[in-house]
Amino acid sequence: MSRPTEVLTVDVAIIGAGPTGLFAAYYAGFRGLSMAIVDSLPEPGGQVTAMYPEKMIYDVGGFPAVRGRDLVQGLVDQAAPWKPTYLLGRKAEGLVEHGEGFELTLDGGDVVRAGAILITAGIGEFTPRPLPAGDGWLGRGMVHFVPALEAHRGQHVVVVGGGDSAFDWVLALHPVAASVSLVHRRSKFRAAESIVREARELGIRIITDAEVTALRDRDGVLAEVEVEVKGGGTEVLPAQTVVAALGFTADLGPIENWGLEIDHRAIGVDSTMRTARDRIYAAGDVAAYPGKVKLIATGFGEAATAINNIAVALNPEAHLFPGHSSNVE
Ligand SMILES: Cc1cc2nc3c(=O)[nH]c(=O)nc-3n(C[C@H](O)[C@H](O)[C@H](O)COP(=O)(O)OP(=O)(O)OC[C@H]3O[C@@H](n4cnc5c(N)ncnc54)[C@H](O)[C@@H]3O)c2cc1C
Image: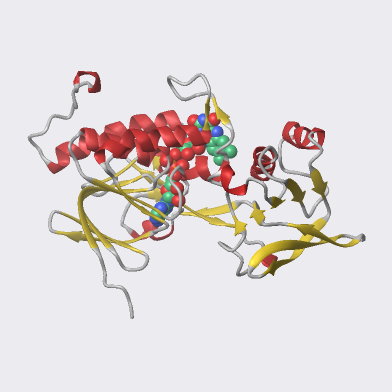
């Protein structure tokens, strides 16, 4: 039997739970607006969570250095008092007008009714590049990224890939896992030389010119991975987790059909962050205007601009300037 369609009504629907969308959620709450945040990924944090949660970031105002995952946690905590509704693992698909606002349809059919839409979709919906031998193993021992290192404490972990993310996971998991091995199908890596060197110096097992050919379970739980080494036969590694870090493709997908001005996967906005359509705004990496610089810091400023202008679009009596948060008890 199919699940009945759920309808959620909010002032602002935010599409994308990356740094920009999360800060926009805080800001919407500060402006007295209710909000839902939709993201196709199962965790908040956008590119930061998906690609570099363990890296230090040095160019966010107020933080001389902040680890990616800590910045995301801070943003989630900052928005929390306003009780955002998170619709994670859900893709925004259809958008139609409804009264003065919109009806946003998510994959699976649920609907968010909102007075305004803020698109903070970054570079689009991420689709992890598949590991052919891992077909059917997602969520059964195979993952594409590692939101919580502790979940892998004491495990044997095999990371597949040769880019920065693959090496980031290897280095982050090394202190907690029982063992970490990296399997890469070439002899050269896309990852920065310094992190490859660091992994080698830590004695991490790196198997190159090799492909994972099978994952095998014991009593229904992932237990081992078969690796075929070019010209060197087959090897079996113990593994409770396989991290398939083969990169992502990104695509704006259905948003392309919403009647916005889109060029090179970026949405044209004016200085209020309004798109070509009333009550639809965009901010962060996805928003484009002359001189745009795609950075977390830029996204924060754009989120504040967008939400303050949305507040006025929803209520013309509202002030554009929100007042200073430091004056609020
Ligand atoms: C390796 C790396 C290192 C970086 N280092 C830095 C740095 O040091 N400093 C810095 O300022 N910036 C850095 N950046 C850039 C920074 O991460 C981005 O500028 C930032 O993440 C943009 O945030 P955002 O919220 O606009 O978009 P994103 O982080 O891309 O988040 C967008 C979210 O929208 C979701 N989404 C998209 N379409 C849909 C849809 N249809 N339905 C549902 N969800 C959808 C996606 O799943 C994603 O979670 C780095 C980027 C990379 C890849």
